[in-house]
Image (tube, rainbow, N blue to C red; front, side, top):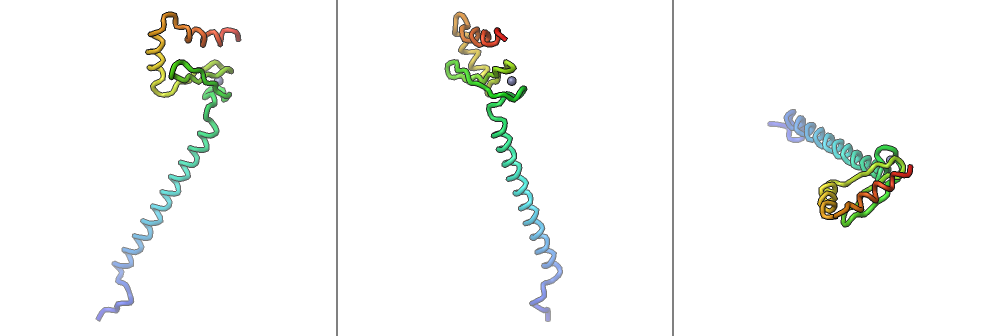
Length: 109
Ligand SMILES: [Zn+2]
């Protein structure tokens, strides 16, 4: 008669594999949550900072488009889709006054 208290080697193997799988999943979760944390910290650190010179970006509004501008290196940053929206808005303006005003900001360096 088989001894019921002692698990067979197949059972032991199964539980060992389960244990390893649990720990592997836990490690994966920890690594993902750390990556998310690091991304959030990086975002906090870089948010609204110029990607080229690191100075603060200033927001200039044109209609519903917000253009981030660096007054230090004169770079301009647009969010996804804003270039197309800006182009549409500017094409409806006769003189492109707004773009002219933006360009004028950088003339007196
Ligand atoms: Zn800059």
